[in-house]
Image (cartoon, rainbow over all chains, first blue to last red; front, side):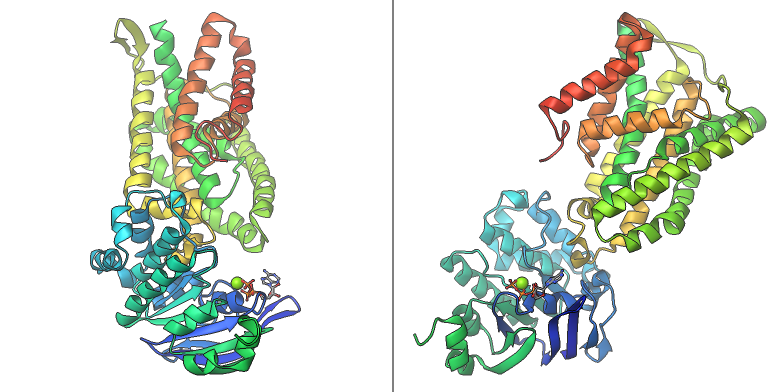
Length: 236
Length: 287
Ligand SMILES: Nc1ncnc2c1ncn2[C@@H]1O[C@H](COP(=O)(O)OP(=O)(O)OP(=O)(O)O)[C@@H](O)[C@H]1O
Ligand SMILES: [Mg+2]
């Protein structure tokens, strides 16, 4: 279980994430919806140890993650696919994937996991020798998710995976994520693309100006007036 | 003619080798090490002392000095560089800080060498046997220097491009911000890279001392040439450093032989400027 309690992130005086608290179990898909600047990326980066948590805590199965450096957080079983994907463009697909298995928890099963990644993303198997920066946005996002899977995470954090992708590509990506979830991984997705992310999530939260202002099952959120107003342009 | 080609390659091979060390330090640890040449000269003197007072051959000296270079650079990184890295708000600030600090380190190393050995030219005679290469005669020590440079350079390329360890170091160079997400300890990678650079500087010092005279104050010339090679090759590019190093060695040797020995540095700079006009990011550089 991944748990945030009153987690707060500050940039100087600016409060980016304000006492956020919720939990997530393995095999579950939770989406956090928020507009630009709501604090979505800050929240994920803080969980992953990329930026400091100013107040409150993050725990994984009861163990404190707050203050643990990012590379060790990865080794504890939390993988972040950041904004901008975080792949190494000037390396090949296979190098990126193998590099993803750097944490000691992932080493022994590296070949097994890579087979699993190729099974979910057959395109990556075809393109294993291609340099990532020469690939399309959708393919690069596959590399990013594949690389995160390579670290054998218990929880996968995804920062706006649909950003900049064509609707059909987004659909395929979320189908692939559903298969990742079937392997028992818990998914925490932050998104502005409400429709597709709620379709694939079990439940979700609303994040506004760093605070959680709403929560519910995907169905409840889909019919929620505030969500409709904020993201779907009024009453569609 | 052939003689100059061989001599040019010998010189160029050592330039390529030491430039690889500098480019690894800069590309991975983000430290522009201005004391790099003085580390080379320190290794030259260490080889000299081991050979002349303890009769330890330069080949054996490699086994002592290369690990020493690694270990000492590791300590220098922990003690001097790490605090800079920790406080630098961004890479640009780290570059400036590292230039200032290693500039100081340069004078510390140089001062110690001047105190110990004075400012005169130093050399020793090792494996001076003439060897016939395709019809021209070359000193054995020069040939050995070339072979060693090539072997160590090749080993380094294999490590960087064919092992997981090298892959991790390259990832830190190419994507420093994302590397922790791959589970890479970037701090350790930077320290390792800086130490590898020190080991290469030590290797370069041993090899160069086998066929060249050196002085306590010559470090800055080596730093400068290594810098030129690094920039010519494309910052952070190991293959670029090899090509640019060999090119520089050949240019120097040919200008010294056919034009005027006094013009070698001028020629080097001319090539440098001309190539940068055509390829501003270096031979293998990326925009
Ligand atoms: N490095 C930083 N320094 C200062 N302020 C920052 C920094 N990063 C983010 N912020 C601020 O924190 C707030 C939350 O930013 P964050 O990037 O987490 O939002 P977001 O929900 O991911 O937005 P987007 O949808 O645009 O990606 C914003 O007001 C932003 O300006
Ligand atoms: Mg964001």
